[in-house]
Length: 496
Image 1: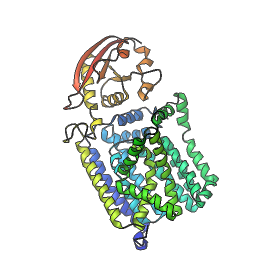
Image 2: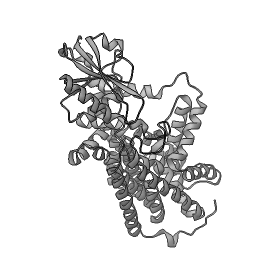
Image 3: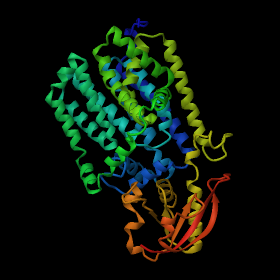
Image 4: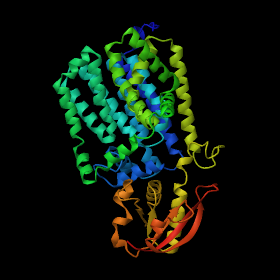
């Protein structure tokens, strides 16, 4: 790759570029907040589940560590429990992640590249989508980028304060999602790739920082030991090796999805750069960025070929990948490519900001299968139907047969004097609600009556056999305008 632009006069001062970053970031955040306010999509059941976690403080939950629950609790404690407030953390934390990416670029290269990378992060297609939802990836990416910045700064001056930041970021990241452990793996690979990295690999102070961060996970490990290590079991179930290898279609789907996650030009430039830099030789800075991106992509690609992998599972690769691409955009490529990439990302940002305002049933001229929001529909309608039957029947208990239904009912019935219980399938819990509010664990509810909503024609035999009588109380559309029906049953006389 030939150098196209001399960077000297374009590098800019860090303070000037930082002001430009915050000016653009504030504009993007403002648009996202307005868009979030008008977002008409009900909470996805995962989002509703995270809200439930926030209302039940603990050091762990069935499928994830606790940090996201703490974050949601902090925002909803100030803002309230509306969909807007539940999702509010996402655009705010993504903005902070963009700033840490900016700081990484400034420390590694110069302020001009930092600005391109920082704004580039805020406009990644996956970030534009993620900012409309709340998920565990949001705090994870903030912690990852902060840890990367601390490591880059420690690499330059060996100051102890960076070890403190690294330990906190690494520890909080582990409590956001166990995928933060990839960070240590990437560090080891950097040590193998460069002479400078090998020096860092021998630095006991760095390993002390990693150990201090790992200690942040002790409360979660204690919680796991008290709850049958459910998160470990769930993670193993998600990995799901066995019977699928080699899943070449899954690998192709995963690789293809990364062009949507990072943007087609950004991901293509990244892949080409890996080949070119392998041939021509990479700088120490480039080796560091490859080390903190490529291993994650390789690991998740391996997972995809063994079983399955979702597009977001490699999200931690992209702070470093974007920094690498940003340097190439500025130093080695015609500006046309950067402008074209930015144009695509601005268009995606604008489209998502507008479309979420029309995310309800029937608001877009698309069929259910074509509509990307259709999986989020039905929660408010189901809760309204259940609440109406419960009032008419004078029943205070609701029984749910799935995680999706449990989460949405608990959230959308939060103003109703109803208690939601879960029906546990099998001998062990299959989700958070089967762990914490399984009806089978409540023999004291003998003789009580329940409302049971379902999309099936009738009540499963395993459930019906535990009640003296079962009666259909009503039917409601799955969502406004749907031809599909949900049925609401009254279950009388629970028999443990």
